[in-house]
Length: 196
Image (cartoon, rainbow, N blue to C red; front, side, top):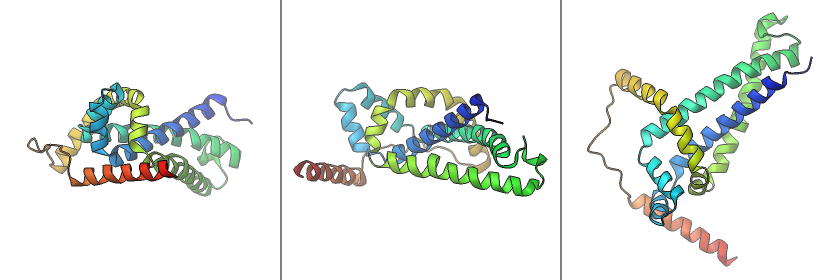
């Protein structure tokens, strides 16, 4: 029996969504804050949008994690049925002759697929030029961020309740020596590339 095209499409879409969220998370964490500030000051709307997102670190990371978890849940649900059918000829792993073996094989395959295609590759790719990717994807990134912000705020609220952590209202995000070093290194790399 061939896999249902809708299930296969949903599986691929959820894998792409997970890759997007993983990539955006690493781009966000590795972004050069000084370059983002300079991009904002140059007047481009994407630079202003990225700088706006960079000022709300806790909320942004929480919304990316919520999105990634939703994508992985959908991937897990879809991959289970497709792998059961393809490998064991049954609709669910519980129906296989050796259900625990079927579950173990499904889990191993799904884990490898997710780690390679939705974690390692996108994080490596987006880490290479994080500010560029944040600028390119600023509009869909902001839309998705604000769409996922309500559940992210619930998660943040629960974490504060259970962990007892409160945001520090006196903490100001400012550019420091690490940001300047990061910016100077990226300029040197660009100059070296231009000379070659």
